[in-house]
Amino acid sequence: MADDRQAAQQPAQIEVFPARTDNIGVLIHDPATGATAAVDAPEAGAVLAALTHTGWTLTDILVTHKHADHIDGIPELKQRFPGVRVVAPLAEKDDIPLVDVTVSDGDTVKVGELEARVIATPGHTAGHVAYWFARDEALFAGDTLFSLGCGRLFEGSPGDMWGALQVLRNLPDEARLYCGHDYTLSNARFALSLDGDNAALRAYAASAEQTRAEGRLTIPARLGDEKALNPFLRADDPAIARAVGLDGADAVSVFAELRERKNRS
Image 1 (cartoon, rainbow, N blue to C red):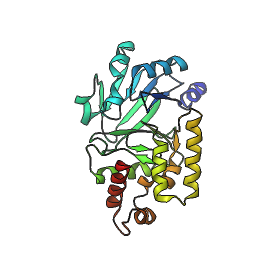
Image 2: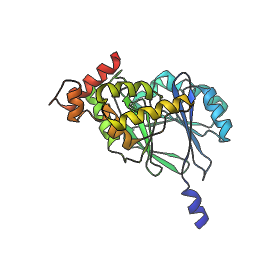
Image 3: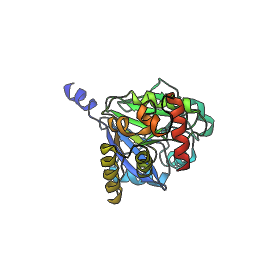
Image 4: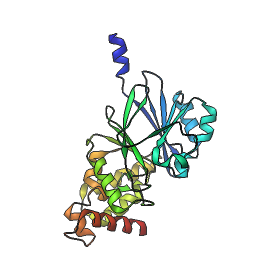
């Protein structure tokens, strides 16, 4: 019995890999049961290569949102693994292929014995969700939150996205952020244009540049670093408001200006 409990408490194993042009693919594996989930499916080939590399068998696909570069691989993966369970946000189920289970804010999803809370994060798309594995301090944020950045607003308002980012910001500092793209270098350039005297930000940007030069992904990121350095998580910081010429403005207005400037950068 003690051995069974110990096995059930093994930490998740997480494999991160590049996909498409700049997508990030992720597998999360429960060593106690052998269950493995892909978070989104940017392309089948990259997911299959990662499964071969790890020796894991796909059991689940956890979809964050409906955009093609996050769901294109689902049909082929479902064909290769007929028993795989596709979990997707309820609000976007009609735009995602082969959905088996729908989820909404506050729901719980299990991958073997690993457990995630579903967090609604509207803004990039109206039905976007994130998956928070609290025990393993792993946040899968899709295209809501990037290292030093955030997603574009295709369907939601600045208020929607700022609200979603505040929810994610309230998670523990030690949480590891896994996002849908490695945009860290371009995000760093934008952040430095606002906060160039920030020594910690300069050091972070330099480290990210070295990491990419070595052919490695900059993800996962530590959420505590994002809280301190990511301008989109600091829209309520007077220093960021001043940097965009909105001293004294409310956080939603500052966030909207940040996002518009980043769109043009």
